[in-house]
Image: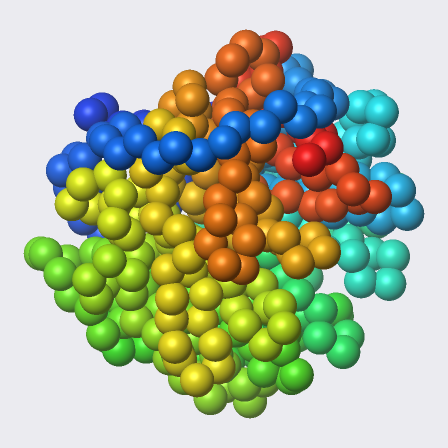
Length: 423
C-alpha cells in the first residue's frame, strides 16, 4: 500500500525508539538495524558556554494548511527575499516552493502534485540568472512515487520539469540540490546508476543543461569510491567536491557493505572520480550526510555519527580536510550540551563556521552552533524550549549579520519553522 505524502515523509524521517533522537532521514540498506543499536545521544557532557543571542521565529508552517510543512532544506536569498522548499504539505500534500520576507510574510509559489511535476523536494533551491532550480526526491513522469525530477521555477511561480529520473542508469531520487558552474548545473542522486542494482544503485553525479540535457558523470560502486551521495557538490577551481554517506574503504562494517563509512571525493567535469578520505577508521566520524565548504584551501564538513562522543557509534563530528588528504576532527559532539548528529553543511562567516545539529542540546531537539577553525565550539541556541521549532536539519544562510534557517518540526503548529538568529 502506498503511503500518502505526509506519512511517507514522517516514515522517512526515521523516528527510532531508544536511539536518542531523530535518525538519518533516508536510510541506507540495513541502516535501521544499525540505528536501533546506537547509544543515546546524552552520554557525554562538555562544559561549553551557551549564549543568549537574538532568536525569533519568522514563520510557523501549518499542518492542515496549504502553505507547506516540514521544510527540510535551507533558504536562499534573491534580492532580499528568501526562497525555500517544504518536503510535504502544499495544496496536494507533496511539497511546495515558498518565498518569505525577512519580516515573516510567506507565499507559496508552487505546490507539487507528484505527476508530472515531482514530489517531496528535500533539497533547497539555487538562483541562476533570476531563475530558481531544484530537485524532487519522488514524482515526475513515472508517477507520484516515481524517481524524482530536476525542475526550474520563476520567482512568479511558473514551474517546469527539466528532467525525469528513472529512464535507465541516469540515477534515482536526487536528495540534494544543484550548483551552477558556468551555466551548467551539477548534482547528485542518492540511488541509481550503473552499479549494485540489488540495492537500487549506489547513486550518481550528474550534469544537466538548463534546457534539460542530462549526463551521468560518475556512478558510485560502494567500495572504495563511496555510496549514497546525499549532499550537494561544491566547485573549487573547476573540480567538483562532495561526500557520500556510505561506502568507501571502511564501508563494509556489519551485515551491509554500505553501513557506516562514507567518503569525501572529487570528480572532474569529465567524470574522473578520486577519493580524498574514507570515514570509519577509529574516531574520525561516519556517514557524512552534509556537503563541504571551502575556506582558505581547506574543506570543512560534518559527519552525522562517529567521533569520540556518545558511546560506541558517536554523535557526529565537525572535520577538516585539505587537498593532500589530511583529515582532522575539529569537534566531536557529546549530546546534551553541544548537540548531536549534524546533517547540514556549514557556512563561513568572516572566518567563523556556523552549523546546526538535528539532535542534542539542552532540550534534546537540536542546536545552532558556531565553531572556529581551531575547533572551539559554542552553542548559540538549543531548540525545544517552546514554540521555537525543533530538529534543524538544513544549513544556515547569513544575511547582513543575521542567520536564517529552518526546522522540520515544532513551531506554533508542529510542522516546522523559518527562524532568524543574530549571533
